[in-house]
Image: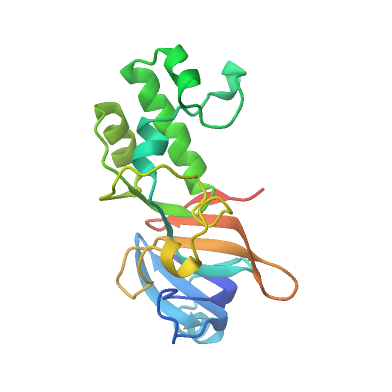
Length: 209
């Protein structure tokens, strides 16, 4: 199935500061690959059978979280049913939980789901716990090398301080894996940082309600 993701602005290569965004741009996805990208009208004519998703934000490559080791192996993401809050627990609070490998794996799955909600499609390790490695592999997020640094879930949040050029993982290219992030724009066309949707290997895995 072909899906055409249309956005107010398309920025295929955020790290290339000489490449301007494309107004009313789009990306065509077939399976887990990018089949086309460019101005919406050109792609709509070239792929008339594609299903169109209208987003109205900034369409970029998926983001990378550089702090996956700390977030998934040194912090616990509570299950809402536990009623112990929603923020990751670490330090003495984590030590009191006495987690086994099963609970570490469940925590990692919840943490990865929260990352998808921030537009993350690649996460840095290393991942030393077997249950965490399994969770990362099954999530479909790309595993990257990392240094184990501590940091937040949101690569573009105030705590991280990364510009989009550094937070984006690579570029969108025809034939490349379809990892996309849709970021919210305000009325002036400026990025607010909020994630509208995340597409991982062609699959829409997060959409803001």
